[in-house]
Length: 332
Length: 293
Image (cartoon, rainbow over all chains, first blue to last red; front, side):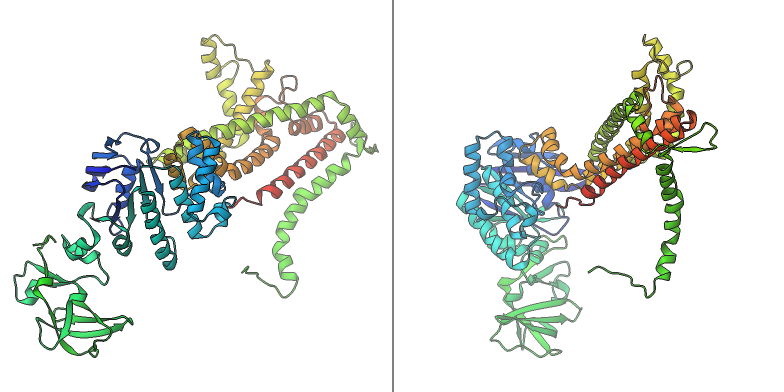
């Protein structure tokens, strides 16, 4: 258990800069999610903390100690990989005990710690099995167990749920969160799934093209996105963006309104044509096209009447829900 | 679901496999059968008549101390060739696997020796180690070492081992490199995070995961050392000095075609046939049952 500090961390492969300086102070026991689309540098950032990639510039501190030059094993971290990276020729027990055996921990203690982790993760019946004899969810748990038994200062997760099916993903995401709270260990979690980020994070880092666009609590980020990218990436369906020109305003700005803050009405700020409606039961998504072809989604209560497809309607919203961005995508 | 092609009659499939059957029959079954047949006779020196001796050739063979010595020579030679070629190949493969840039170039260069025929490879090494004009011999002479594989049994063995192993390194290298690259990078990284340094990782993760490849190469290399090194030995030492490099295959040739003892030579072929069939069984039994993770 420790704090984790990234201080203007940069990464370049040759002349290509992939991470342009990320800084964050992670508190002890905090769960940080790094979220972003593929290729935004989120995994690279995590691997730099793990020591699997060199740090081109800046500093990584774990527990207040600079670890830039340390080997992965000396950093007091554990990592859960996307493909689990279990040792295929070893039993579940040996997989979990591997790190402890190398650290020359006493045999009785190894057995005790593995038993504890196995109990916590409900893996007790499978300790003698090989990874290939386990289901995806069980393999995921073994990977977690391998991380837990070593009692590291920081947990690193590299898209650990992306190989699981949707239902299992929801279940495992709750389990991982509960486990992390129970152990009180600092965690850094990489995902491309904004729902995982929203539900799991104490704070999240939204990455875009090697830049940390915004760092903050999920609901704060949702309510108050710092950039156009964040507004578009966090939230599903995504934020509607409308050119200022279309609203008769300054053409160099774009205005964003979340789908739940827009409503279809008889008189409003903008004319649009209904393309189709998706009734999802609890809510209805109304898809519309504006005069310049901009697509807009309105999320409304299932109880509300929804317009006919092809109908010309007006869109309305409260000024307080408007989020304005300049041409570089920054909030104004 | 396995897709099977079905034929209506028997003639078309028979016609399709006929070339393979003919080749096998002419170049394998017929000579093998003839070897077994001849091993039961002793022909007269002019090849005009044959005398039935039953298993007499075999009895004589196994009471011959030179033949028994040839077994030991073959064992030493095969083990050395296998260990040297696989050891060097594994080392090179590990280095190439760690490379990010330029591994393609190294791979291509390392494959070249495989394209050199054994006899040519033999001549190549013979030139370098020739006792009078060899460049390596010359350098060794300057260092105060008198290289003479024509007289020294150990040096002769060393030279044929190196020459045989050399061309084989390419083949082993390719398999080892493919085996190493089939191991997921993340497994190695996980082991690194778990605290294993390079050598520990190799011993506990890489080597076990590589074992199917290693076992396959072991069998294939032993078979190679047994049977395909004839050209190297023939060009470099011709089995000498004092039969120090006469492996079983070479003895078949030298007893039969040089010594004109065709009965004994045929009997030796049968013994070899027996050995190779055992190796083949081993190969199929254990290698076809590949380990899947």
